Amino acid sequence: MRLVVKENKYGKGAIRCRRCGSHRGVIRKYGLYYCRKCMREIAEKLGFKKYS
Image (tube, rainbow, N blue to C red; front, top):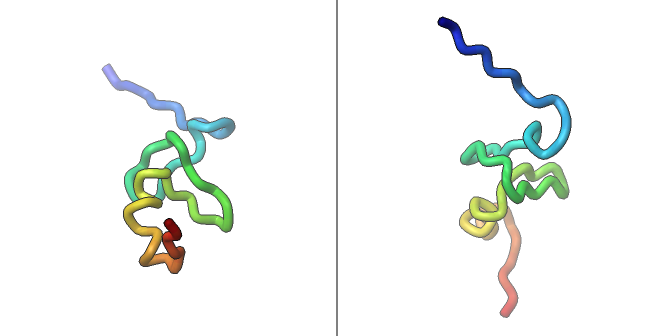
């Protein structure tokens, strides 16, 4: 038996993190497409600065 997986074209399930593939909490601003967890890890490499 063959399992067919349908990809989402619309909604939150269609947008995935380009690093880990998660579709939860994806930051799309500026065309980033990183989830919030990955964004915290690589923000400084991308040029974002942390302020206290």
